[in-house]
Amino acid sequence: MQLQRPKTLLLRELDRQRAHLSGLLVAEQNRRAQLRDPSLRQLSAQLIKQIQGHIVRIDARTQAIIAADRELKAKAKMLTSFSGVGLRTATMLLAQMPELANSIAERRPL
Image (cartoon, rainbow, N blue to C red; front, side):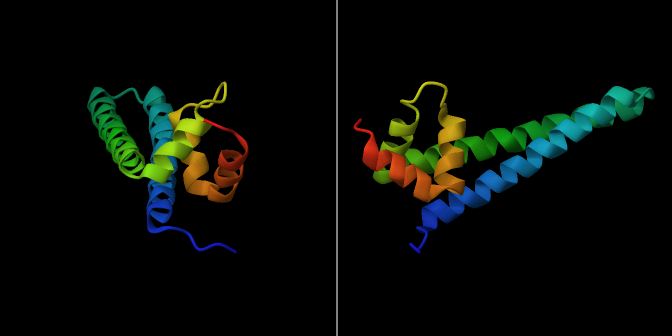
């Protein structure tokens, strides 16, 4: 078993936090749809915006980490060369399944 690089571990942590926040966002959006009281709807809207802001900041940090690391940047570029694979999916693969990302990178020329 290969040891994980610190940046890969950080990407994994960021990806997990993003997934958690995405779940919270959906739950709050669903809950807000059931609210009738205007003040509660306003509080819910503020919470939704706050969660969305956290997701944007996590995405920016993740992209900065990948852009600053030559190896991660090359792997992300290769992964996004596949039809239907965007930066979000490439990031998830690099963070959660680095062995798979490595295997794919070794097989597909840029």
